[in-house]
Length: 269
Image 1: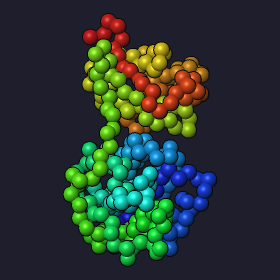
Image 2: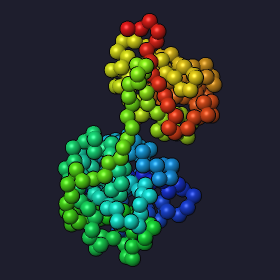
Image 3: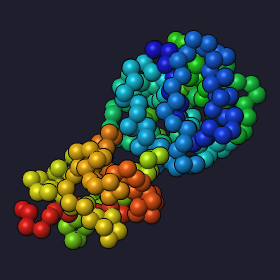
Image 4: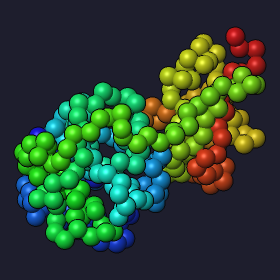
């Protein structure tokens, strides 16, 4: 293990929750390196979280422990699992938050966390991030054999979300939706660059949101006049709608779930 622990939650940073989780980690493993991915997933938004996880975890060294706590079912009988995938360990609630990782990587093993010897006592009904996720991650990053955490599960038994994917409409358009909005107001869609390339082939794409259309993809956020919209492939590899020196969220009154369409410019093959 690398002794690196990442945190991805919907806790925000106003309350004490994130800081207390870090305290729980450091109480077990004082030399751990803790990296915040984000704590601003919209509350209980598992779809946003699964995309963020897929976009972030591969950029860390193998051996990193990733703690993902977006957990509307805390206190219920939902499982907490440690998933070994591509040299990384993902510790998460079994609520579908790992869906896109499971679709894109082969799983080496799944362990249901059951060994309370590695939990904080007593375990709160409402703060498993502090009492289970954090200390378990600290022990694993410190070198604990993950097989001691609980019992093996079949990866096929893990919960999957119904993640809506882009589709071809009867009108021959590639149709996706906004799944995330970043702090710059960029509207991030679920349409991957490879899907646009496959759909358009050599034609120029035309991107539509509401009644607004943009021809072609920009290479930079300055690819339009100031305060005008543009379409670009962002760092996650997905289509984004942006505004040069402005907010696409404000410009389009955009919201998660809004439809985005890609067509071929008239006259294109």
